[in-house]
Length: 240
Image (tube, rainbow, N blue to C red):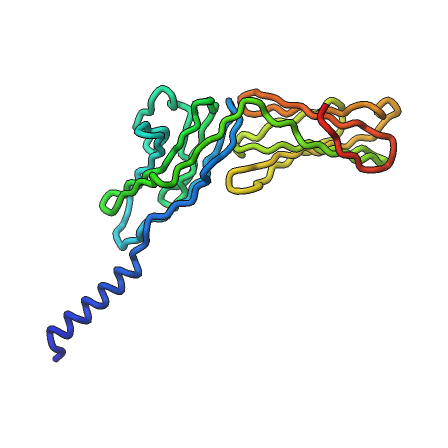
């Protein structure tokens, strides 16, 4: 029969190995700064991990704070202050490690910095106070980047960047034609929306400016224009 002390030693070593295997620090991945247009909206991307356990975890409490003020939570029954009430929501699955949140109708005072806290009952809790997110709120939207190519048909593009993929900007043109609009992710927090317009030019279209108007969430607008040349070459449009 195995000696009791030897058996206990084996159990202790196995337990330590299992503990080392299960142990993992709280980690988070968030951008430190995000430029965002005032009155528009912004999605703050966030991914976190927590120390694993064999316990069955049924509840995850998630919060974002600015100082001591709670700005959003995954518990609807927790009432926010008037400043943030009806303007924020958790957009990800906390259980799956997604702590992304969204802020609507951004105000010039919504600079933060903001930080995330997770509470896992019967396990552990952690505040990521060293991983803050600051919003650089600007009031005037940048003009779009435009290009134009004139051949048998005119093909023009109008492109803007933004931080709110759930409510991309609307792009319209000063002339009738066929256009398509597409959005894509540029990095973790920045998205772009591009409208491509095509039309068959008439004589009256040449040496005139083709304009695009961009309307962001919150109704702020910006415009850009390009000159339609008759020459068959690509021209880069410049804002008026």
